[in-house]
Image 1 (cartoon, rainbow, N blue to C red):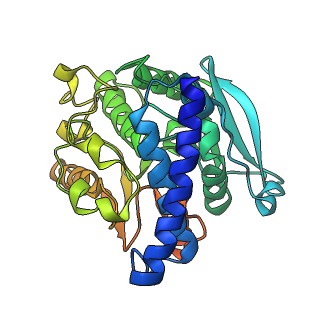
Image 2 (cartoon, rainbow, N blue to C red; image 1 turned 135 degrees about the vertical axis):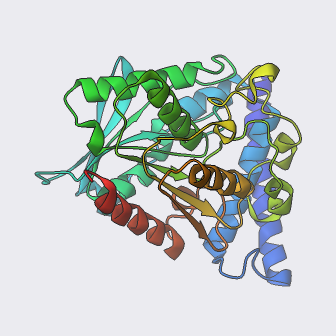
Length: 334
């Protein structure tokens, strides 16, 4: 019964958020100068839904929905990109294949976001399909175990299994790009560090979109950008209570912001100037430069957290995918 009440609560919160955003825009203008009506409404919806879900993290219906939802791929992409179910090391995985393509420039191993608590590869199907289509690559998006049922390092262990299985299948590591958004970006960064420490052949590079690399939440931008993003500010007033035990929040594999990044492969970090964890990306890039890593940080004006997936119709989302495609073309195999 409580789950039904919570589902009604989310629906009501979304309706209220839409109405409030419409009136606020009519009276005060867009949240950000470049935002279209569609973007303004989408961010309001996301803020309402994510904020409500954060208040009921143990609701079984909401969690089950998050594990099963599959975002539809746009019709115009279905004739060029197909999603095939497969496995990597026993992990259920979405494989993205470009229809009619004879060669791929690289293989992306993509980890979905969701604060290490929510989501599944299916929630990111539209985003990854666009990335595959634009960059001319193949992609694999594996599942990984989520907190709080499975705390750190369970998800990282699964990410390593996926990578090791991929290269064991005969894929040249130098043609592999680790990628992910938000928590998936943090997971990809942590995986690079672990692979280096274990002496495993490294991938050709990493593309990190709004990476979540500080589960202690010590950055200053959550409060600064709370009005232009959709993440719940209340969750940033304390360390992430779900992913790690309190004593592990500064472990470099849980919060790569504390890691030595020496000898990691090239990295492309994309961040939104209006997103709450912008500081995670800025500090990670600074640390990478400190440790001699070839890193590119691109900050997109007016964009929120993981904008290429949230507002794919924005020109900034299209530019971000083109930037990723160009970077992969210059990085893989060099």
